[in-house]
Image (cartoon, rainbow, N blue to C red; front, top):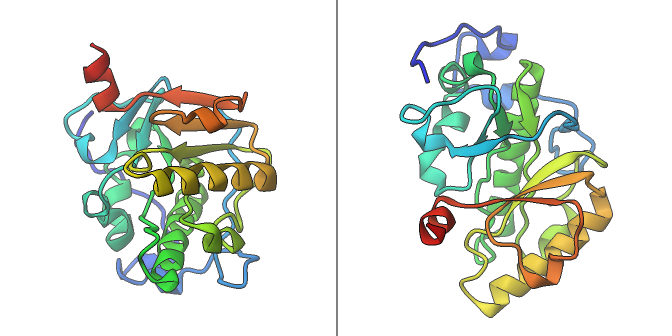
Length: 219
């Protein structure tokens, strides 16, 4: 992928100060102020590339960029939205929404903040014409009240099971949350990154993408 920086017409509030994210307010309907994310009905990515490897791997309009990584590897998409979007928009990839962590042992306020950041970035990218598949994340049952707010219904969305197989409890929280998400937003298709648990294998809308580790192990 070329390392060219592309010029982007940003909202007025972001043109001079790259740290003024909170001044850019998108339409939202949740009591927490989550921005509304528009549905995605476009083509599915032919392959997924992790965000932190953009400069080392070929990327084109059939590539999906995912953020199923440690948060520090993509924190810049929030801290410096002007600079980071210029590194990929010219290749016109399909962006999966950022997956900021919502660990169950973190305060709910932090979890909600991370969901807000993901929604905000998705809304910004969509405003700028980027193709975005909304990413859905949740923690335990307490998060169900807000984790699916302002997500589009009947859209293609993205989900990952990475990190949920480390314990029986994490596995159960993931599968229960998955079905709650499924019945609330009724996605048309689910870009699923990682192993599909038996408890949700019956879901016909899942399109699975292997992780790098699964490909290495399989090979």
